[in-house]
Every structure is written in structure tokens, then in C-alpha cells.
Image (tube, rainbow, N blue to C red; front, side, top):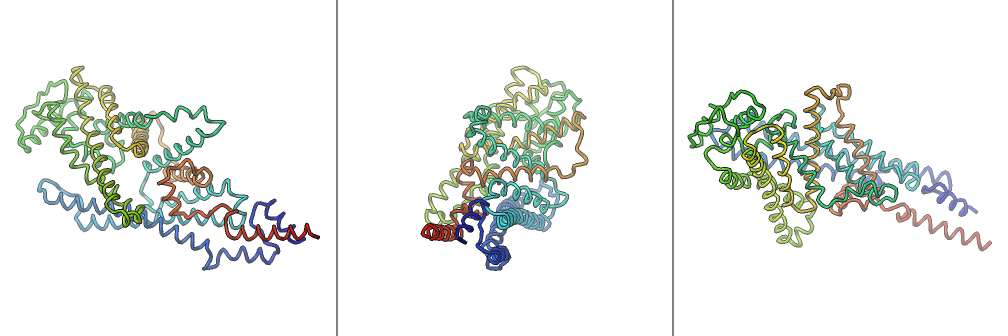
Length: 476
């Protein structure tokens, strides 16, 4: 009858059960065995998480340092840090992000295994990953105690919302409510909305943007700060304070121009003596050159990490896809930046005036450039930009006084990130079909999620014993 008791324990409690108290004690203590598969999974996940975090951040830092060394040849460029300080900072950031993702992966797997070990895998299957993802979220603090990651937290929240909406779409209860989210061109529309806020802030209120993103826009926007200040003053109907500085800037580039202090539209400030069409062409060429170094690591690093086996088997195919992807993404970014100036110029010339509504309207269709990108990348880019647009929007209205600042919650980014990772990891464990295969492969590689309880060798062995015991009982 021991077999019948074992069978009831296994199926009624929904956990892996042993036939005696001694066996249960061995089962519990085996978790802390140095040779335990669980400990091996935890260490492996932490190591892989560290390698991804350090690899991505280190790769971006490497390209940044190379670009810095190239800029050092220009006598007009003044750097805020020495090369040694920049390299030291890059190494620290690489280690911090490696520790961040390594700790996140290790914490998630640890909590997942501990809960499953002591409370049963099958009994806790519906909520275990949710709790593990929530508790792993504070690992973001390892990137630096004083470093806010609001943009990253909002982006991860957007990713969690997308996964939750996909779950809702296939749900009978929420399917009709989530039906509008299946719009084919929703990613491009979202990019247009984001562009209107981001590019308006780039011209009118750069302090509402994250520092790194502001630096990115200043680089790829292709305009000197004095030009942006002049455009801002014209848009805001403020007295000009930088016209002489703008004239000196153009004179240093070989363009002799005299700006009209009573101008109605800023075309002469934006592109000097060039026509709007000529500026579009010349800007597009220069913007493409600036975009190539941005996307080389984006395609090269995943090829080395994710597609490392295929890279050895089919090097020309993988490298060819990487080169094509780099060229297409660079065309997207350069077209995006060039069209921002093009659309604003068109509207300014049509209405023969320049104001804030026209800036918002002119930067809206800039998001159409996203159509150049690969379909699978469009939602990623639009969500990334939408996260920054949300942060910029709420920062702007908070500065005006319409939104009180949440001073009591100093690390709201960690709270948002933790809640988001809880949703994402829950979907990963329970709704795996809502993930794209490439992301699912990466997550499986890092976390090494074990097979369902009834497919583990221990469970199969236990079920086999249960079946043999039941047959024995039937024969009595």
C-alpha cells in the first residue's frame, strides 16, 4: 500500500514526493549539494547573464572609445574626459552591467528553484516565475546607487505591456478589448507619436530628455547647439541672442551668411545658404556616415553571442545578413533625422511662420521613416522611443507644475522595473508562445528553464514506480 500512498501524494499535492520522511529530508538537503543540478543551473545562469551584460555594454563602450579616438584628431573638438578616464569609466560600466544582468539571472533562477524545491514545482507553477521576476528586479541597483534608469524601466514596462496585450488577444475574455492592438501599422503610428514629443523636446526643451539620449540626438541631429538655440528662440517668440554666434559658426565652415533679425522662418539658420532640397540631400549623406558606427555593434555583437554556432558553420550568410541589417538600419536613422528637418521646413514655408504647434506637427510624420526597418525591429524601436517620449512628456509637465514630483519614491525606476520583469518572466514561464523565437532562445539559453515537472527524469522515475506499485496493488 506504500505505492498507493506515494501515488496520492504525488498527484493530489502536485509536488514531487518521496515515500518516507527520510527520503523527503534527503530531497530537501540535496538542494544545497555542491553537485546539485539546481546549484549548477543557478551558477550557469548568473555567468551567462554576466556575459551578456558585460558583452553588450563592453561592445558599445569599445565602439564609443574608438569613435572618441577618431574625434581626438579634430582640433575643434574639446573632450570633457581624458582617454584614460574614459577607458576607466567604460570598464566600470561594463562590470556594473555585467553584475546587473548576472545577478538578475542568478536571483531569478535561485528563487525559482527554491520555491519549486520546497513547495513543489507543479503546485507553484502558476505564480513562481512572477515572484522570482519581482524579487530579481532590484538587481538594477548594481548599475550604481545614484544612477536613475527611468528610460530603461519604462521601456521594460512597455515590453511587459506588449506581452500582456498578446496574452489578452488570445484570451476569450479580453480578446475583443485587445483587438485594436493587432493593427498592422501600429508600430509606425507609435513611432510618429513618439517622434512628435522627442524631436519637439530636442529643439525646445532638451533638459526633459535623458542625458545619454540627449547626447545621441545632438550628435545625429547634426546641428550645432547655437543653431538649436536660435530656432528655439524663434519658435518661442523670444528675442534672438545667438545670431552672431550662428554667423560665426557658418563662417568657420566656409559659409558667409548674414541672418535677418526679423526672420519669420528659421530655414536660413538651419541650413545657411543651401536650399531646403539641397540640405536634405547633403544632410542625408552625412547622417548615413554617422549612423554606420551606431549599428555595427548592434548586429555584430548578437552574431558573436547568439549566432556563434551558425557563424562557424555559415560565416558568409551570417555576416552578409549583419552587413545588410547594418546598412538598412543606418538608412533608417539617417532618413529619420533628415526627414525631421525636411518636414519642419515644408510646414514653415507653407504657413510662412514658426511656432510650437507647427514643430509638433512637422516632427510627427518623421516616424514614417521606421517603415525602412525590418518588421520585427519596428516594434522594438517604437517602444524604445515611446519610453523616452513618455519620460520627456511627464518631465515637461512636472517642470511646468501640472504634475507634482514623487519625491518620496526615490527609486521609482526600480519599482517599475521589478513589476515589469515580474510580468515578463510570468509570461515566459506560462505564456511562452507570446514571445518571438529569437528572444525565447536567448532567455532559454540564459535561464536554462527545466522541462515541466512530468518531463523531468526524477518525475518520470517516480511515476514509473507509482505505476508499478498500483499494478502490484491491483494484483493483490
